[in-house]
View (cartoon, rainbow, N blue to C red):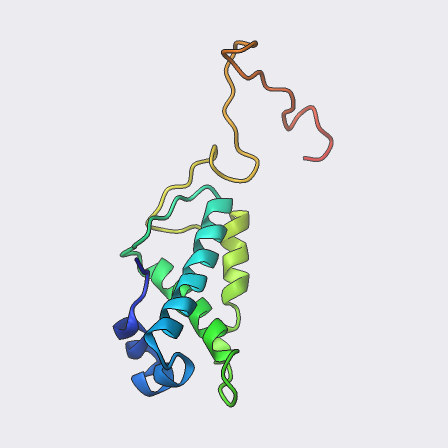
Length: 138
């Protein structure tokens, strides 16, 4: 499954450029899968769960940006356009929670540092040991 396809990329950068940076279907699929993995990784750090496909324009645009950076960097004579150079910074903003994915709702339990606790202890529960008040790190 893919977040973007050749038609989506062709509409953004043109079929001639896409053919230059990803001349085969296998090359295109490799760059798309790598871009999708980076998007999913950044989203999961903030508690978002992304599926194998998406209709979110924001996620597709981020995937396109990562695709362009990865594929252009492997091709001599083609440089990454300035408007795509901050894509990895935007991923960091999503990962850290500074930016939101507008079509998704994050789960604080699934994000980095998230957990669920119950009031009981022993084998049927997990008591909370640390919280923000008891640590000087927060």
